[in-house]
Image: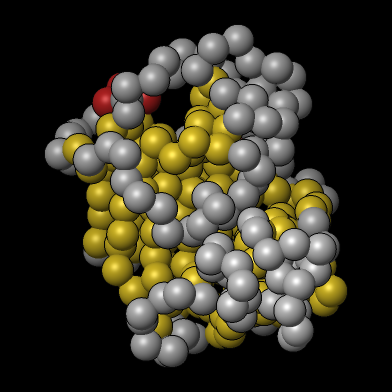
Amino acid sequence: MKLCAAIICVSMLAAGTLQLQAQDSFVLYDTFPDGALSPDLWTGAERGPILDLVRAVKAGELRLESRTYGNTREDAGVRNSQVDSGLRRDGKLTAIRARLHVDRASVTACAANPAPSEVAAQIFGAFFNTGEATPKSHVNDVAARLTVGRASNSLDPADRLRVTATVLQCQNDDCSDAVTLSSNDLGTVAVGATTTLFVRWLPGNHAFEFRKDTDRVQVNYSVPDVTAPGNPEKLLGLASAVANCSLAPRPQASIAAAFNTVSVNASAVQ
């Protein structure tokens, strides 16, 4: 999955009016009580060039850290990396809620490359496919992503992070290439501050609902949504897109974040 070649993308669909739909209640999925991730609840994976990596449970939180970099062969494009913690019951999940604080997020740009560097903590999920799904592939899967992060070209104060809700249609197996169907700005949060995020698929409304604390937006889509995704993964993680650069110093992205009190739709765990 790419960071939308940017976390902050131009919206292609307007956010729809919030509508009511019969909704599954939330139940706790994990409060990380045992000091380690349970293999019955979680998977772990990394993608792309990662210099430093932490995935650990400490004080009832899933702590994730990474430091990534761009390549030096060209002054165009970005290099994508991810640190993923996948939820096991992904095929049944229609909603994910978690508390998150990002304690560090820094990125550097390349003077010779117009593409910004970006880094974020994220909730990501693929919920349906627009055509004939390919098993274990994201091709034509539609995914929802809620990110808290920073871009090198951001005008936000250094102590603020941007929250963005995005709906994507994946174009390749790992969704590193994707068409942005919608992107919506949910404002900012302070570095180190805890915020509650949630993503919910509303198939009856042909929509996704995103929330940051009390701020919420419903995004409607017009693509077909009756086919299960080829890769139904749902995850908490880190994502970066670092500008490639032939100039020194090499651009980098660094982030430290922690998730806690993870909840999901009740029907996924029954």
